[in-house]
Image 1: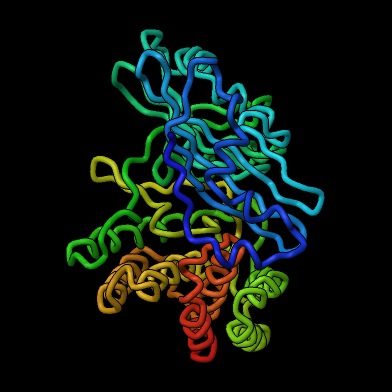
Image 2 (image 1 turned 180 degrees about the horizontal axis):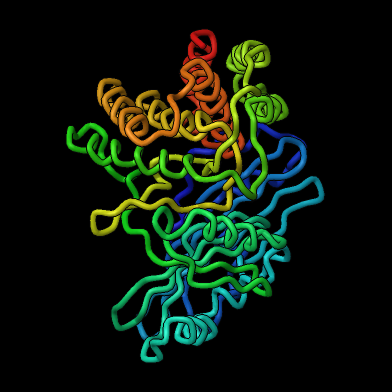
Length: 403
């Protein structure tokens, strides 16, 4: 029998009576049964099924993604990714390559198609490529890794809904290969942009190790270089936008923890009075964390530029340090280590920054980022971490009031 252990889901099964299929939609065993017979090839057998992530809109729908491990007669293991959506009307499911909003994914995830495309764009016709689905957000995006079967450079593709691949391609051109992995090509018909490898994520580093602060210091310098660029394309993002975004999502926190929701509203009241509009925008990553900064051969670059925008520099910096603080709140790192790495990042940033950071504005943006983290824990039905919601909201309130 395949492994289908399901994470604790007591709250998940009762939190939204408007979605009667919610429990089954989040259950690994039910997902394994739903996708039975959908595998490419009659001889493939399901080995394991694992819930990857969920995205919940109360009273409307919950979309969960699952990872499947398969084995064939040859003994080779294959992988697939699918989604299950629970709505008022019932439950439906699909493989990621059948996503109606990402029709280009069928070609971008096809090893034969992409081996030909990659050979044409690299000039190396001696390679075939294996395709691995790394991250899939239904209806929005899918990240793929292309690994040559006989060794050589690895490439990464991102398929985005609509024409957003064009925006990513433009952002890569604006940022340049010094700050981001070089663009190999863009295929609008497939909604696909392909880049080179950026190496390993700084997000995987143990911040409790003293030498991690050196890498985080260099990450600060990298972000400062991004912010020194000339303003260009990309949506404009302000503190008021972030406050509005959290305010619209605040009811979802009330479903999970009413006391935390009240404290969240108190923080939003403080932030709504802050002056966040007087600082000129700069080229910005838009959703910066250590996870988005990678290292290879002693060189740092940033990934995931589909959130590229124009914003005050404090916004990127605040988001990264807020996620550092989140590690301490959920006890994944010690408070002392988080403070050491925060200081290292700010020092690295200051070394190459075009101007000093506005520390009051930084505090406001950090509060907004902490509140967004709280909302995401609720929206993702991250039950195991709901215990940390009061700590997140308290930290946000402290940052907002200090600013």
